[in-house]
Amino acid sequence: MTTAVMDPGLLERGGLVLDVDGPRATIRLARPEVLNAQMPATWEALRSIGEALPDEVRVVVVRGEGRAFSAGLDKRFFTAQEIDGTPGIAGIASMPDREADAVIAGFQAGFSWLRHPARVTVAGVQGHAIGAGFQLALACDLRVVADDVQFCMAETSLGIVPDLGGTHPLVHTVGYARAVEICLTGRRVGAEEAVASGLALRAVPVAELDAEVDALVSALLTAPPGAATETLGLLSGVAEGLDPADALAAERAAQLRLLRAMVPAES
Image (cartoon, rainbow, N blue to C red):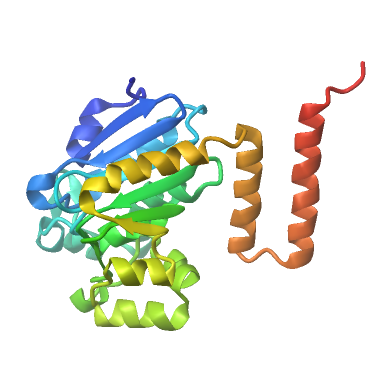
């Protein structure tokens, strides 16, 4: 097992551990003493991981150490002007619009790469996945949950909005009406509802979560890399609103690329 080449100090500051093993990379939120609360350094480290992963990585797993996936934002983010040299809410609020927008866009970049069709991303979620934790799970293509999971979009109840890319996948997954209700009430969504609503593929006992994620990763890696990437691109395009005619054209183009890769051109 090897570790991708990137600044280990950045990973440590972000509270993350990264392992790369052939076609699989595993990112672990590793601050269990604070229920894997996130901070700007976490998002910077996530963004750097997305930029540094080797091309051969086909599946990325996101997990949280301890009894929670992530309980959301580090409490210091709400009160401090800066957290370890990066702006907190007070610092962002005092910035000019363009500068503040760029800062938040940088935070979002730590999540958005997880939906790129170059790789399949899987969140294995146990315990609390609140606010930023919920949005991190939503950033992944697939979610497998433990039977103790508690999803919660807490931002609106705190006077802010979910701004780490969570609104789009939430609406696409559960529908507009249920997304409104989940966000504005701030209620908890448990394992049974998560599976029924499409938030999770399946729920298993906590002790079986790692094994279930491993089995899913193995299954996802059975498809040839080229076909898997092209199929992800097609499905992603449809999910983003590609109309039927354009989807058909995209299928034709993808198929031709694969067929031509299979049959060498005549010299």
